[in-house]
Image (cartoon, rainbow, N blue to C red; front, top):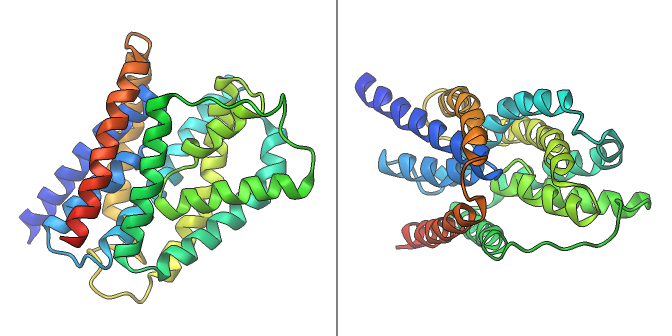
Length: 271
């Protein structure tokens, strides 16, 4: 049993290496890597298909709680965080995160896999086509519109276990923010999504049976700590490599890979 647990940790550390590298290299959320890999690992170890997607998503949110802090610190030093956006979107993303996590907790595994597959595939297609939409030169001034936008970002991000960058960065650039400020602000938004999502997933999964060892509700602590501790170290390396790489080509390759993974996840869950 201990050898099996050690193998489990080694696989997670490898996952952390690649999720950090890809996050730093392509500027996409590590959750898009973490969730499918954790899903396959838990499936390999024979955990119920009714819970493994919940654990993968909740644990990814836990990882983001930790990794977003280092990202916030780095972007704050570079003055890339728009405090005005955080103030206007704070309530919406937090409320959206809580509602999304509650709803996800009540879905069965099949539905959650389909939701992840559809949303992640949409993100992949957008990444492949390099879609850039410009709506205005600043975020809306309307209180309700800001809350609707931020609620949707928080809701769908926590529903599929990503930090919000896949939604908040294109939204902020559509509202006239340059890419550096969009990414920096997105890091703060990611933490505001992840923390309430973490607490909610831990609470709603508290009495669920058959979870992996050392789980706090749906959040598995070995997954969170092992993946986060390594990805924090490899993300800066990925960022350095991105300066030398052709990011457009790499993003297209990753988009195709993500689409294939989404198809594979749905196929494995149902067949």
